Length: 109
Image (cartoon, rainbow, N blue to C red; front, side, top):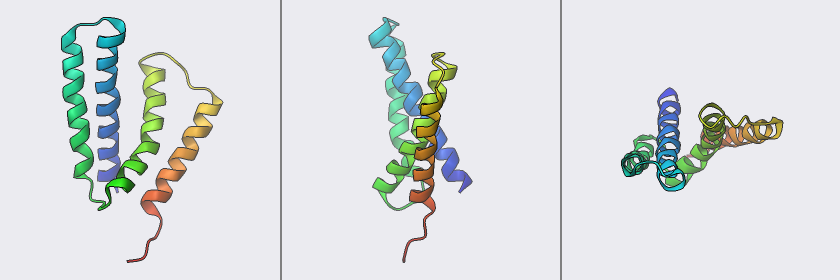
């Protein structure tokens, strides 16, 4: 379980961090090399989820989505200084609950 959580966190940081660097390049006129590094990090993001032990691609990405939402809110708060409000946190809690159900619900077979 801990390995899965670490992989989800690494994937989230790679996706958000890579996307943020591309954003800085395209939207804020930062140097091209930032966009290039961001693109390479996004490739790494595509690889990280394949290291999960869960057998179903869709289930992995669905569960990851819940954690991604929380990471995106935290990134926005810490990096962009855009503090999440109560409704952001309530929504994030529902997403984490959904992630837990997807990953840990007992399934036949």
